[in-house]
Length: 328
Image (cartoon, rainbow, N blue to C red; front, side, top):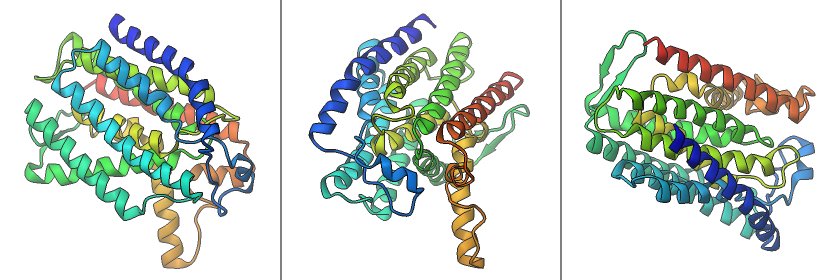
């Protein structure tokens, strides 16, 4: 517990100190966000706000993980996976800001890279920990053995969550705040498990420290990303966060419970799927705009109200997920 809190505090302090410097640098380089024309009109006022701000929490996360943990193969696999997904976003953001476009890499390019990295992480995690290829259902303890199907299925699940987090990142502080709550949930899961490890092969205390480091860096970033945002995390941050939260789910064998822990992400992504499917099949839109947070904007809700409501929902789902694990 004490070591995890040190990692959290250290990463938070570094993010707070680095934030103003990095934001100033992004402004000098004119790495500003290009706003889509088909989004809510009031978002056009945010055009030019520095993006690629995910570096503000990723750098403290990496430093704390390298300096404060034992740098075990599992820890390095986790850190490396987060950075690889962040790199996809960094390249994507770089194309956008340098070429002054609203879109960077093509969808096919991003999905291909995400599937390769997701499959690689899942395979290496299973090889390192020897957990098997099953999914564990809470309360009942039922284990669904998937065999070789486990790898493509979990890779698809991971890519879905990564992009769901990316879709959630549409309002100041929204994805960052929700992800901070999910990371706190996994910090508690790891700290509790470290007292009596339920699964062999994993040092839960070290994993708790890496989760705490990312949570601390993210909390520092939120000081600059809250409304009105001085910086956006960009795909650099959102893809890295999506990879981080689901990698934690895989390492702790809580992939099934993650449906509850990350339910806000999932609902945001499904709102887009429903909207696109309905329009293509029936020529009608279910929501005024998707993802779901934009629907509430079009209904007249203020940005702050939407963000706080989604934070509250995320906190509730995380608590319910933790309760489900506690009674299992």
